[in-house]
Length: 330
Image 1 (spheres, rainbow, N blue to C red):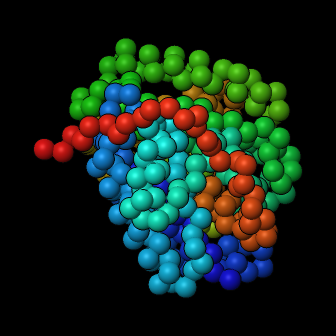
Image 2 (cartoon, one colour):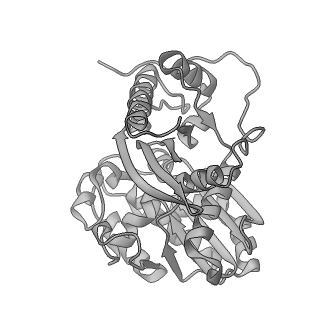
């Protein structure tokens, strides 16, 4: 059986197609289309008509590509940038009207659970009590568990794109005041979660997401072309050094550094600051970079035969008048 998932994030729409064999999603084909939805968010975090158009075009293309590769209908979902938009229902309605696809909105805690499931399957039982961190564009997911699924899972509004937009200058390198204020904000949000992780004392701490992957590369980890089975670690000490390097450069020059891609250059500093602060508060000295995350977690649930696992676990907003943000198109 060939299955697939479409992930609508703040930077890209990603399609992952896999063959369901031997209890694991064996990669067949992946594709991504850049969205950069953070550029289409107004001061109240509403998504405008141009964002809807970009999402609809990317979802249509992803579904057509999945069909060409012989996949069944993809599980399509949107992450924090859509989930947290005040006009979310209107965005979802507009995308569905244009594409015929109703994007699912998973609560952040469910995203954390699915990411943990994927990390557990990748890391194996030898990882022991496992802590997982995932930095997305709009949120930070944290999970801990001793078994297949986490005992503790939470999502916090500490995504790299969100914090960049709300706390850091757009073009110039940040000042010490900018960084101090952002650290204070992150510490406040993480205080209770970090206390729980310290109390649990995971044997292994894993990091997922493109943000952590790129930061690990900046800190000396093997490049992606070496494949997913090469061990990759990210130490707190190295991340602190990387944060200093990133802070010394304006956003448009951070892509000159190893591993930092141009689309994520502006948010790389915020991602490094969140990652370092989380590691410090949680007492984590080293993270193991895990190539599997939420998309693989969804594929695993489908392989396990639990096709309706998401029923009752999607967000529903109370009815209220909402409107799309005004387009900023010239």
